[in-house]
Image 1 (tube, rainbow, N blue to C red):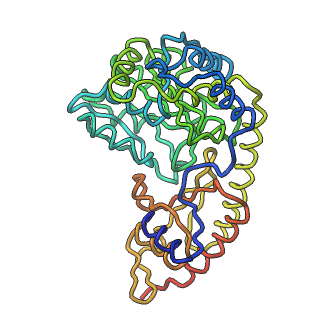
Image 2 (cartoon, rainbow, N blue to C red; image 1 turned 90 degrees about the vertical axis):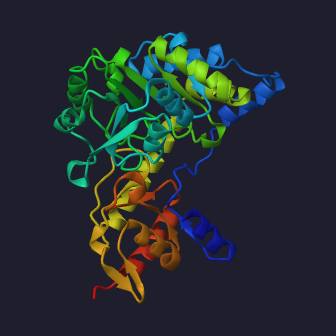
Image 3 (cartoon, one colour; image 1 turned 30 degrees about the horizontal axis):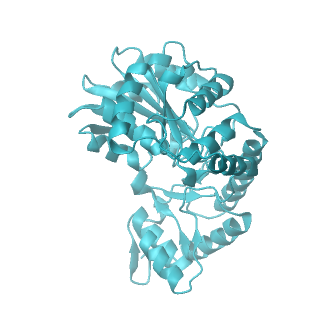
Length: 381
């Protein structure tokens, strides 16, 4: 898909990209100024493997103030993005044959990271009919003696689903039935939340020492390229991740760390402004997509993705082109409608397509017009 999109663009075709999971907004000025100051102050040497102490203190402050979670700096590892934090945790905890429960739809890298560690991904389907969220009964049924870890992403990429505090408490009760079971909570979209305050499963009584919290600055502060994330977890897990990170990357970028410190310790009005921008775009995209016959569209509660069910178009054709699955449909929309999307099959949601609304209102409106026209051209035999 990406290659074909680039080919079309290189030929002068105007492709609207609703595939990329990256804010189109810019890093706030005060964060950029902190990075400039770090350069002037010569923060240009190797950083400690697990990150600067001052940045760990900023993370500790953020977790206490925003999440009601108490950690010490020794329970924090700063990494080159939340993606590395997740991979560190999986590599540290998962042995050959261990099972990791992953609700589907899921972020594309979770299963591959588990396989890389020698583990076995176990998928639990959370379809659009249940808001893309798994139930305690589903979780209980998926747990076996080999289960080592459960991955929860809330707000979720790709579905935009958000677990409420009550839903997380119910899942936690199932986890607590098993002594050695741990939860990895991916909270990178924490602040892009449209239903109120964020809930972390780590805040459920009895779960703090059984949860690994992953977060970072990429989404909330439009800092995707700065590559700073963190893992907050019990010290025995942090020590293992510190050792791993010391072997394959060492400490994250020193300048980026000072920028992230400013982000977490500075004024937070920018975060709310970005959230409101994404909320407006979500409302626009949902409204327009619901006007297209044949799509089942739910209302995402967070992140900046829409995952409509599109299987109603499977079995249709345009000329010699037959649409049999989400990959066929995504390629058709790219080549005929000139809109880039991502097939749901990449996320364990084969009946869906993922649309990112981290783009302008104008792009959203034009993209939906193109999609509507392209889909209208599909016919059944």
